[in-house]
Image 1 (cartoon, rainbow, N blue to C red):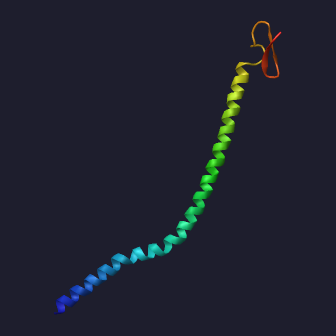
Image 2 (image 1 turned 135 degrees about the horizontal axis):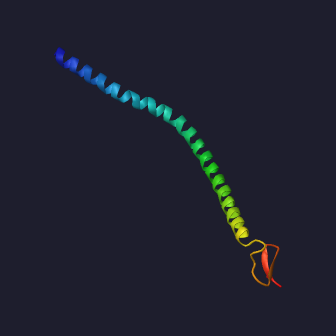
Length: 89
């Protein structure tokens, strides 16, 4: 009889210890998820802003390359450079 009681007590203690960390994590999960959601929305906004900035830089770089390639003196015979374009005489 004493062995059965001891075994039941040990089993109950093991089950209590096994489930104790899960309950403490569940209590802290709610507050940390709110923080993570806020951080996530800020991260998304920053990425969106960075992508717009990168797109503008890419367009500017492309235009700069075009103007470097097609600048004054590269229009050809019988043409001249005016307002960023080659115009025939």
